[in-house]
Image (cartoon, rainbow, N blue to C red; front, side, top):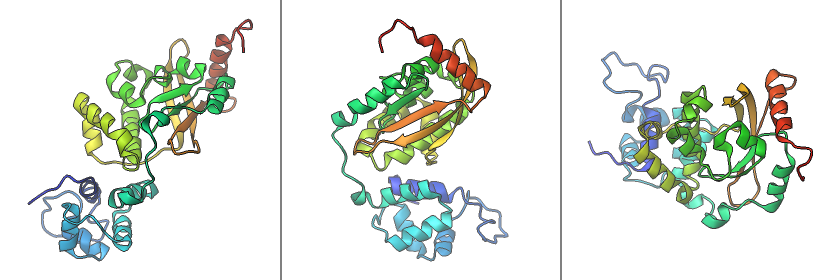
Length: 278
């Protein structure tokens, strides 16, 4: 059977294969030879024509209606991030115009000033393709990946230090790729070259990218092995900076009164010389 590797078709197929048929209400007394739902089963559950769904997944129809997209999202159990990703693939003409690439790599002077003032927090700004554009001195001290000029994806998959820096490296890789995919559809010109390069250089990245998992973590916690300080368990929050550049500010911190907060404070104090100009 013909297969079309359009982004929309690949995403729909990957989500269909993850749905448990029995949980979806499919009664099948035969030995199933496919993962998840068959095309005709998904079409039936979504209330659309099996032949139309086949054309959609194979890339022979690329203009589904709002009603069809909503029916598919509901049947596949997509969360908000996956639903937004589905829409960005199915209706790319509705995505915002892309900013100039050079502009997207420039951090506003006011943001740079704030980062300079935040001496006791690991904080940094990334572009849609996960380039670190600016950060606090403490960010670079805590994690070499959080240094201006680095790329978070390249560090995670290609830098041998990543497995030492991230005790939970496997989880980090899953989150990194799923988050990048959440960004990719809306800002493809900025992300495509990175994805192609990473697919060529890292089999792990390629396998995760081809799994089509997509979600965006706006907050969470990571364990970071910090040279001279041991493993710190740091929470983080993200803040989308206003503007067309798509910049995101990451801020890491230890839980209040925790040993991690104390160690982070000690690191910050050790970097501050009373004689250094501020």
